[in-house]
Structure formats: structure tokens, C-alpha cells
Length: 341
Image 1 (cartoon, helix red, strand yellow):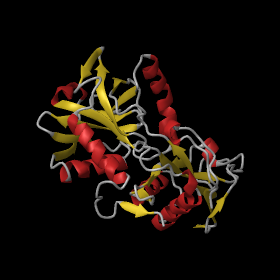
Image 2 (image 1 turned 30 degrees about the vertical axis):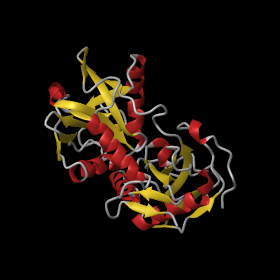
Image 3 (image 1 turned 180 degrees about the vertical axis):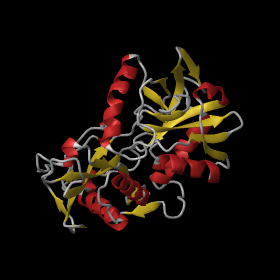
Image 4 (image 1 turned 135 degrees about the horizontal axis):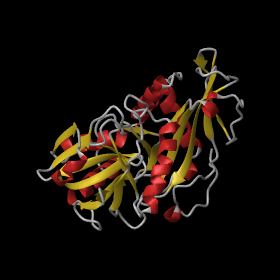
């Protein structure tokens, strides 16, 4: 359905580009309609929509990958569907059937196939599904109607000149409250992170580390990503907390570390005072897959892990394996890949 596009794949960033089609479905009177593709990239909603006033909205991020044989695949979209539904449940929005979510993603990729970057460029087609509360509603209560939408943009590789470690500092601000919405992918969490992020970048850091809001002693998240560390005895460790967004990339890395790299893995508390236990550290998420952490500044002291300039060997192996699975160059565990036919 897409036209030929003239894009310099090697110079793509992470910016909005209007593609040809997006999917829109509406919930009204207790059910979702069939949903359809549209060329219109504007949504018309009531001024009284709960998404605008009470933050009743959530979103997801996943990618479509062009394989060496030219075919296109999605990586674990069922997990994004389930996480979107967990977010919807948390803020009283209707769930999207998993099949409907995956079908919407496939429709959008097929309709915009010309925008899926060629294999070998490191670029991908980023999909942004979201749900918003709409309709005439002034009181603080769930919306009478909802919109589920999926749009896509081609994005470049996160690391242009190869993977490079970056430094973070520890924020005194909280990303989420105990028993709050930290585990849901809602916009309010990101709005709360904008100011601490700006403070970190003004000091020359890539972003900031958030500690647990109750005690400020344990690492929870790294900017908008999940933390992991490789201990000196070669264990893959990642924090466990009800305030952390359950990253699909993180759980994929946990599986890869255990089953492909034969490492011990553990989800547990990661104390900010115990950074010495790790020989390597990283942040993981959809955009970068892995961002290696060179160092973390805490109490005016920079704790350096493997190196501030070079990626650690275990981090590199984890990255290469997951990246290879996503692009179809490494055999995937059963059920991880959905082909776009």
C-alpha cells in the first residue's frame, strides 16, 4: 500500500516522520469497533477528554525489523500487548485483546512497508501503540469512550558510531511513588522525569538514576530504562520492585543470559552503596537495546564500572545476541518472533 520513499537510512535519528497509514479503533458502549487504517495523522477529541485532564492514557513502544532475506518481523509483540493491558487496568481503561493488538501492529507495518529500513542499516520501524480516554467528561472518573491507535516512524540505530558507555548521576527526585503507577507505562511517569533528566544533562550526564522512593537506598530505573549489572562472579542481576516498569528487553536479556550465555541470573534489590559488586552495568530498553553504563556519580564520587570508553565483554555479548535475534540473524526462542505476512 505504501509508495516508494526517499529516505537516507544511514542518517535517520529518533524523530517523528509522517508515514502513510496508522490504525485507529474506538471503544464505545462497552466494546471496541473493528478498527481501520487511515491516512489522517490528526485525532479530533473532546476538550473534556480525560486524557487531557486526568492523565488517563498509556502507550507502548516496539519495532519491526527487516531480515537479511527481506522479510519483516516483530519481536515479542504479545508481551507489549499484555503490558499495555496491565497499564490500562491500572488506570481503569478497557483492555485491548492481544490478537487485536498484534493484528493492528501487523496492519500498520504492512501498510507502511516502504518505511521499514533495509537489513544491515541498524535502522528499524518503530511502532507506537497508545490508548487515550476521550469524550465529554468533567468529573474525575473514567472516560465514556476510548481511542486505541498505532502509528509508526522509521528510526535510526541508537548508537551511530558504535556502542559507547555513558555516565549517569543519582537523582534526589522520585520517578514514581510506592504503590503508584511506576509499573504502568503511563505518560505521567515520563512527565515527572523531564525535570530530573534536564538537571542531569546540564551537569553533563546522559540521564539520572532513580532510587526506590521509600528508602532511597536501592536502584530502580535508569532514566526511562531498566538497570542491570554483571557481578564479578559473572551473574546477571537486575532490580526487583513493584515500581519498576517491566521491560520486555530486560526479561529477554534475563532469558538470554541464562539460556544462551549460561550465566546465573537474579532479580533482587540492588543497593546504591554496593556498586562495587558489579564489573559491568547497563540500561536496557526498546530504543537502544542496551546502553552501557560507564560510571554512576553518587555523593559527588564517580563509580566507574568496566570502562568509560569501552563496552564490557558480557554486555557486548548480550547486546549482539539480542540484536541478532531481533533482526533474524540468531535463532530465537519459540514464540518470540511474529512474521509480518
